Image (tube, rainbow, N blue to C red; front, side, top):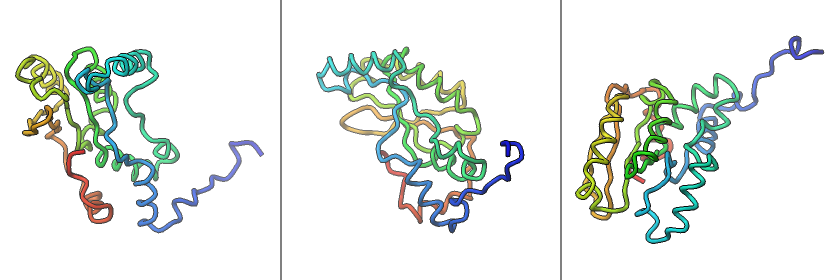
Length: 193
């Protein structure tokens, strides 16, 4: 029998109760730690310049890169329709904005995922471990705001004592009522990581 004539088999995962499917999707697509969109600023490495240089080179060579859509979301349309919104809505995506060249990596990722996926994002943050960065280098934040504004993003500054922290929102996004109940199932996911 050729692949063209084999009957299509439905995944056993799709035969499970919806609550179990959602629990499995959560384990597969939601990370405990923020997903990095670019290389951190040197201030993020607390004086470990050798580690920062290694990471910077790994990002430049492509060894490290922004996250891909989880493999589970690429198995079938039904699973993708349920799991991909969870990936974008419940993960924290972190970008450093201290260097324009590395920030462009994060911006490329945000463009690449497309408008509909950006609308699902709920926790994108710009950070710098140097709490005085915005005072000494206001142009970096202004550039990030400008570039994000071009794709519909708005930057909101939160007061954090130890570092610079800015939330990014895409205000034309619509909350998907189909996924609002997940907070009850998986706990509050709205606190910064």
